[in-house]
Length: 319
Image (tube, rainbow, N blue to C red; front, side, top):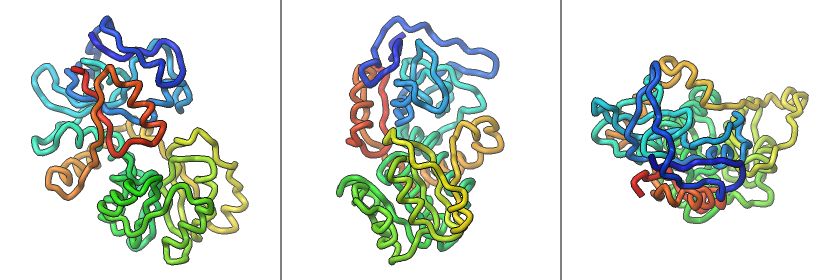
């Protein structure tokens, strides 16, 4: 079977195409999918260098999501424990979701990990209230582009999109952002407050780390919440001063979708039905970016790390 195999940790160069990967087997509660497309996520770049939240073991086939068909012909999108960068992958039945005919592979893949993350960031972690302002970092990315739309749908008073290029900021505005901010602003705190009418902000969805987290936290209003769900810059933010949170009535919340995956019937099934239905009806627009072949997986990781991508990236196992 053709697949991407990692036998040593490192950068994109460790992703190697092989044609002798053992076939996955269906154990109890799992099903083997013929993979039509796999999803590529920023977390995959961390896994390749073993800097992800969950330690990796070698050798490994990366890939946490796939769209494919079951042996009996059902078309599903699935969250995977790994193995998506391949022609076939084993998926837990509880983490397989039927895909409506109106939703294509790219849109389904955009929803299953990044869409669910965006949903939980706003609903579960931030508990967004109507009229509140929301800052979305990496607003043209997989999570960000959906979070912009969902924040608008869930009644945000002002959606402020942060992105690194003019093209990405225009996309965020097309998706419903009220204001945009250049991610490279030297005084990001001041820029966020200016975008909110010279007022501090209520909610920040943050996955960059380093100074971006620090300055975003400084821009929070009393009772504001910063939801931290990644560290794309690979730079840790400053330690959180609990006394400062107390004095200003601010909150910092971490989110990792893995904890929702532990109880999919409770935490994933209903949000996934909502996201798929909104997409099928045209009320939600997943942004799908480039499609790479298996032989181009390393280049996909280079492009991700260099912030050259927009939207959901796909991997085609036939190429």
